[in-house]
Image (cartoon, rainbow, N blue to C red; front, side, top):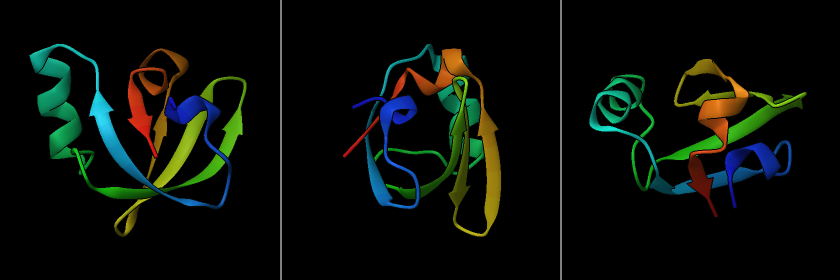
Length: 70
C-alpha cells in the first residue's frame, strides 16, 4: 500500500519506490531505501510525517503516493 494510506504509529517496511532516478537518489540520502523501516507519525491531507531512524521527515502527497510499504 502507498505510505499515504498506511496506519499511524505502526512500524512499516518499504518494499517499493516508484520515482525517477534523481528522486530515488534524494530519498536514499534521507534514509528512505528499499527494506528500511519507518514509522508513520502523522497523516493529514496527504502530507505524511515519518520517523526514519533518528529523524523525522515530512513527505508531500505527490511523493507519499510513490512509496509503498508493508
